[in-house]
Amino acid sequence: MNIAITLIAAMLAGTGFVLQQHAAEQAPQSYFLRLRLITTLLHRPRWLAGVAVMAAGQLLSAWAIGHIALSLAEPLLTSSLVFALALAVPLSGQRLRAAEMLGAVLLCAGVAALSLARSAGPPAESFGSFAAWPAAAGIAAVAGAFLMAGLRRTGQQRATLTGTATGLIFGISDALTRQVVETLDNHSVLVLLTGWPVYALAVASLAGFWVMESAFSAAPLHASLPAITAAEPVAGILLGVVVFGDVVHVSPGMLALQAAGLAALVLGVVLVARAPVLSRLGPVAT
Image 1: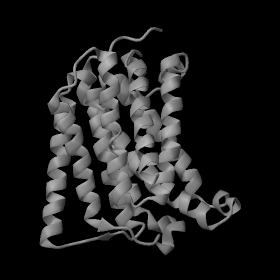
Image 2 (image 1 turned 135 degrees about the vertical axis):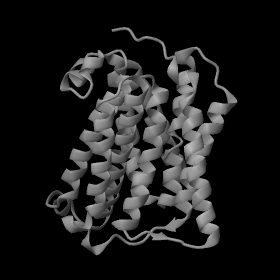
Image 3 (image 1 turned 180 degrees about the vertical axis):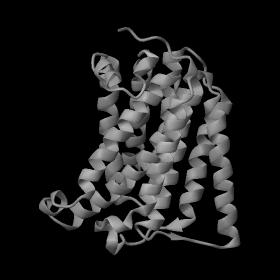
Image 4 (image 1 turned 90 degrees about the vertical axis):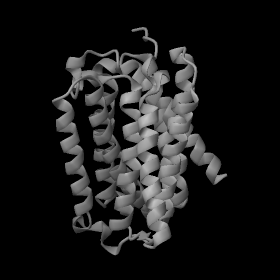
C-alpha cells in the first residue's frame, strides 16, 4: 500500500508538470519571473487543472516522505518523469523512443543508488534552531546563482538553469516537509503552528512553484523537467545527512555505488533532455 500511494503521487506530479508546462510555454517570454506570468496562467483551464493535479500529488508525496524510508521514497517519486513522458505522447503526437524510457529509468536508478548509500537517522535535536540550517542556506544560494544565470540566458539554457534552481528549492521543501510530518506525528497541531518549519515550508514551496512556472515558460518541457527531477533528490539527500543525521555508508562498495548513481543520474538527464516527445507538445487553446 505504501509503495502504491507513492507511485500515485509520482503519477499525479508528472501529469501536473505536463499540463502546467503545456500552458505556461504559451505565455510571453517577457513574463519570465514576473507575477504577470502567474496572473495570466490563472485564466488557462489546463494550467489550473495541472496545478490541482500536482497539488494532490504533493500531498501524497508529503505523506510518503514522512512515512516511508527515503531510500525507497526518493527513487519512487522521481518516477514522475516516466509518467510525464507517457502523458506527453498523446499531446505531442510523437512516439516514445526506447532511449527516452531508458533515460528515465537510469535517472530513477541513479537516485536509488545514491539513496541506498545512506540510512535514515533520527531527526537532529537542533532542528528547531536556525543554526541547524547552514546547508539549506547554501543550497538556496546555489539555487539563486542558477536563477541569476538563467536570467542572462534565453530559450533552453534559461529553462535548464531555472529548472535546476527549482529542483534545489524543492529539495529544501522536501526536508521541511519531513520535519513537519514528523512534528504532526509526535505533537499537536498547536506545536506545529508555533514553530518556524511549517512557515518556512510555505515560503519555500511558493518560491519553488514560481520559479518552476518560469522555467516551464522559457522552453519545451525537455529542457527543464529532467533538471528539476535530478536536482531535487540531490538537495534532499544532502539535507537528510546534515540536518536529520542520515548516515552515509563509506566503503569501497558504497563509494562505487554512489559513483554509479551519479553517472546514471547524469546520463538519464541527458537522454531525457533530448526527447522529442517532450519538446513538441501541441499548442493550447487560450
